[in-house]
Length: 310
Image (cartoon, rainbow, N blue to C red; front, side, top):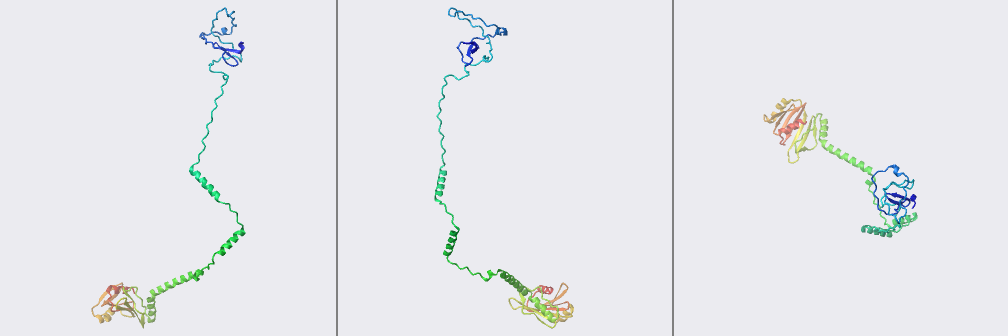
């Protein structure tokens, strides 16, 4: 082969185009001695073999660096396992049989739900829209089919709620008026009687428990009498109010002692001198003589409270 088509690396010749080794000779030992550049780039060595059949095989000299040819030479050590091209012939790759994918499995619950939906959609039939005339006719037919029911007659109070409100308010006012009139009737009666008698008579604010006004308030010239009776039993007493010019001492001498002598009790309360005897009492205040007479067993405390409430 021509040198321009081969490359020698470590004593092994390679094809410059294919990179394949030409002959598989044993690798030569490379001298460790450094060579000069003059020895490498010297004149080419003459062949020592003239007749190869008659001569011995020449000894191989120490390998020298090959002449570098631009674009042809390679100075890189390569392994014999590395090649530029794939080996010939190229074995076809074994065909791999693809494994089929396992299809998805529907859950039993989802399958039942799908069947139920399909059955429901199959049962439902599309409805055609009704015309306005048809709807009106159906409404008339349904109304005629129903039995006629008379509407209940509304009462007067339901028809006139405003009148009911006014009536209720008026009745409440009347009831309250009657109640207050009943409570204040004795005071009004005494006031009327005092005006007729010409004195300043009053109705006591305190009444003993179990006693109430008995009959109308009576009067005559200069005197007003109020009668009280027990709610149970026959006990009663009268409260008399009359004009008088006497004072407390004169009342004691001219009235109390003439009736009971010295059998009386004197009580002083809020400037009043009250003489009590046998459940009865007498006192004077502001020119009016007050006296309590009757068979009611009133205590001194009850008499005192009646006197101070006038």
